[in-house]
Image 1 (cartoon, rainbow, N blue to C red):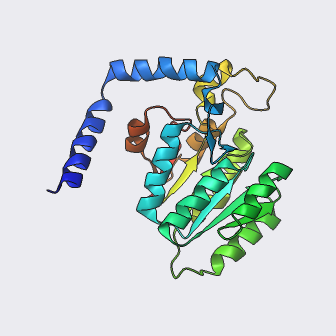
Image 2 (spheres, rainbow, N blue to C red; image 1 turned 30 degrees about the horizontal axis):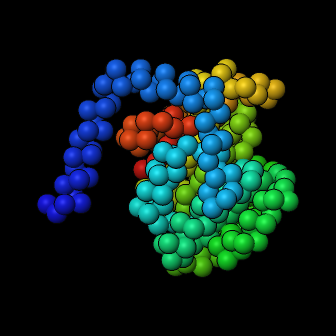
Length: 246
């Protein structure tokens, strides 16, 4: 076993132990409560662009992208464009691929990001669940310009139950076997009451987590990857790392 294999083996063993560590679970919960109360997720930028993600989630995403080597990353929800730039750079590091970024309104500051990353990014302005948007996404993927079909999907737009459930039903068929559909902000179910901004159409029982729970009922094509969540510990997507197995 070479040093890297040894490192991964020891890491995986520690993660397995973490799964049954009740004290660790309590500590993570308490820390996450404090992070939500203090808007910790807003503390970071990527290449100068607000990214609105936990650093741990970013590290996990780059691991998944490196492992899957997708030719397409589909992103719903652009905001400032920080994640778009991040995904684009991951594709550049791999050496090929395209980011399909979707938002109902691409704001001016995000458009500059799209222009800077135009070599690797195709932006679609429109509802992520509209027929027109789905048609455009399917048309891009059907070109199969990279000689294979490997797709990761990242959902981070409207966080209501019905919207996320629609996204899951529409985009999950595009996810390749062994790849992921990542549902961000499932943490609203557990920590949304601590968010300073309560004037939103989602909340407990009506959020990405509740959508995932319904989507996963009798679903034999996807599993919740708890190992990834346990490695991250601090994540905005508890129960939202969905790996396609068939």
